[in-house]
Image: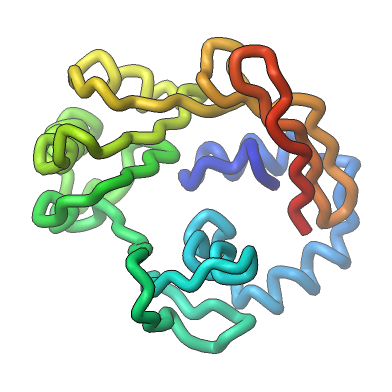
Length: 196
């Protein structure tokens, strides 16, 4: 589903619409059973870094099926945490790197004024960041585009399939449970990515 998947229910729906006719439903069912329906790939950054040879500590909100737990400790200098805005506590953290996949009306039991309240929470969160910190943000999401108008951080890096992004996914191919795409920066190919 990546890189179109951005974390929110509307983005997931768009992915399924785009994949219609290209996905084997029985293979999808088998994969969802393995994932226990709760674990989107974007939450496994620490796990993927470990598989790539790094040794980060990490903690996430769900169980990672391959290791049957929600985190791992290492004495390495990197710590990756999955944070979400569901109850506003994200404001209490200060990070070196923030990755914002999408902003849409979600957790409306807490955010009574919808996106306006969500934007305020994220504005407070990014204001806690050090001046050398980086914000990576998906500019294919309408909520993110609106949010960018509200902040003036210098260290913003954009990504997406939009040609205005700093990092662009192109030549996207969906094959059963494999996604391939090329990553470009300023018109120069950086990598060929294959997600399984």
